[in-house]
Every structure is written in C-alpha cells, then in structure tokens.
Amino acid sequence: MKQLETLLYISILGLIGLGGIYLQTSLVDDEPELQTFEDRHDPDYYIENFVATGLDKNGQRRFVIKATRMAHFPDDDTALFDNPHIVQYEEGLAPRHTYADSGWMNSTGDEVLMTGNVKVVVEADERGPGGTIKSKRMRVLLDKSTTKELF
Image 1 (cartoon, rainbow, N blue to C red):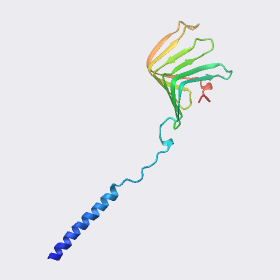
Image 2 (cartoon, one colour; image 1 turned 180 degrees about the vertical axis):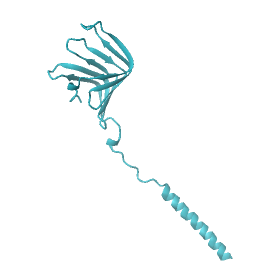
Image 3 (cartoon, helix red, strand yellow; image 1 turned 90 degrees about the vertical axis):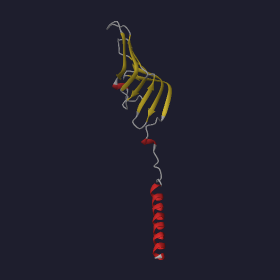
Image 4 (spheres, rainbow, N blue to C red; image 1 turned 120 degrees about the horizontal axis):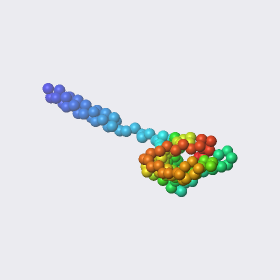
C-alpha cells in the first residue's frame, strides 16, 4: 500500500512537471517577424517649402503646387501636403488659387484631394467678376498631360 501511495505521488509530480514544461514551451513566442520597408506606410522623404511646377508640351506653366511640407510614401507612391496652395493656369483666364489645411496626391499625380478649410479664389477676368468658394473638402484635377514626370 505504501508503494502504491509513493507511486501515485511520483506520478502526480511527474504530470505537474510535464505540464509545466508544456506551458513553458507553448507560451514562448517565436522569433518576431521582421517588417520590411515595403510592408509599412512610412514616408521615404520629406520636403520643406515644397514647390512643383507643371508645364505643358509648349513649356507653358499649367499649375504650381506649393506646400509647407510634402511627405512621399513609396509603398503606394502617394504624397501628403501640409498647407497646400495650388495655382492653376489657363490661357486667357485669371489663375485659380486653391488653399487648404492638408492635401493628398494620388500615385498618378493628376489628382489632389484637399481637406480642411478649403478655399478657392478666382480673380476677375473676361469670363466674369471672379469669386471665392469655401468647402471642407475638394478634389482638384490637374492637367494630365503635365503630370507624367512631376515626381
């Protein structure tokens, strides 16, 4: 009887030991996966006092994009602007100025989504007296023929 009791205690202690070893091996994390730069949405460069000019085939200025800061994201080839100011030019017409708190440019460079206190100012010209438009959000389409090699 004493041997059976000793064997029972040894078996219980053995099971507890095996359970502890199992818990230790199952709770230990594997090596963390290393994230590559391509997996993350981080900017690869910033430009302070950013200015870009789009020209048409004849070398005439079609638009100017200015921003206090531009951040470029290589994973999707987009750009973010702080305090963007876009000036669009059309022959024979007054320039159109668009201001906002922030802007996002798509990967093709032909569209800028302006957000936060958007204001468009058009000066008087032969079309009319001009005016101002205010909005929370606005999409600005740039001349596609000038944006192919902007960035």
